[in-house]
View 1 (cartoon, rainbow, N blue to C red):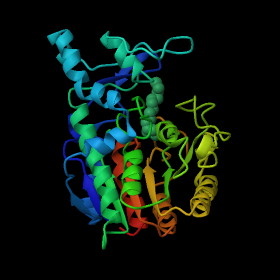
View 2: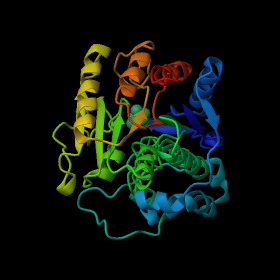
View 3: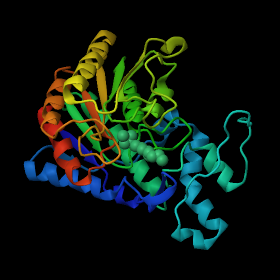
View 4: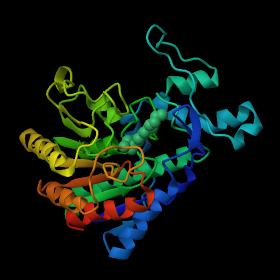
Length: 347
Ligand code: OKP
Ligand code: ZN
């Protein structure tokens, strides 16, 4: 497997997130990715490569140009307000909910942060833009690699911050640019007529779903903790099937907290069957390993060895496959769990 790893992922390093009424150290840390790199190197899995420059035009076909421009300048805008801000992260604190106007863009910085975000657990830091754009480049490169004549069957964007909660014009859930969506768009533009995104992260991929909700060329499937009790709460229910031309091209498979591998596997089979029925030409796997029994913020019960079987089942599709790195917060075990998926998928 060809693995595009983000060499500047650690420039995104949030200090604190709002969690249950307190500011706590961020769960989504640079160490997560280092554990994966260590595990892959130790086990000789994959061929590591650095990404090329990000394709900003493609990024602006998935995200709105004004959101991309906001992200690109947010840190400079923040520090311009007060030089002392350089020692703080940007955390959203106000949002335009029902009844507010959505057709205006305030000039106030806090208001703009709220306009482009949906939670207070997602600090935007000095290096977020650099890390997120390099990660986007990993996803785009991985997609182009599997579509190239003679290219590998599978490639991975090994990056952080993750992406699947980021929508066309908002960040949240530790995500800024939607790497899985960017990979899917790159697959489309490289010649795959029909693309499926299979999101196996513990949390519903709300950003990915919303980006493709009205499109018939990209099937979005997500297996996740039931949003009745699990983040992101306001999307990810089983009755969300897509809209307009996209009707029938979204499948949510919510599972109760406490779900074990046997039950989770049945949902995966269902998701794989939907991808086959869709006649996808290529697939993007939004790979979160926060389904792990030891994950500190999630409630499924997968064991490390189970991830080998997950990889085998995904490879059974026999499709060009791009993996993107999403969640997984049992930091010391993220490496073995991701390496197991990739080994199961054929290394
Ligand atoms: C990102 B990914 C809210 C607590 C939950 C967000 C979890 C984001 C998970 N205050 N925080 O899907 O792994
Ligand atoms: Zn997650």
